[in-house]
Image (cartoon, rainbow, N blue to C red; front, side, top):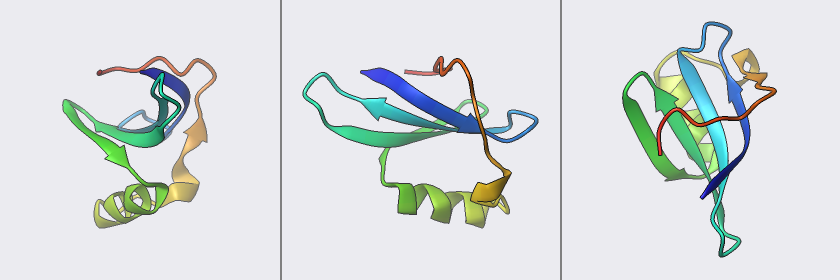
Length: 70
């Protein structure tokens, strides 16, 4: 699996990673502290962030999308 892009909140509390598998499939990963949720659609990412009080517009692109968890 390879992280092909990432966005996070200004303080880095929330991070969204776009992940690609060698087979070509893609999904999103949501990272918050030690919690990692994999295999999400972008719609589900938005729902989970909204439940936590975070708007997608608060995310900024990360220049070097290195994952914190695998």
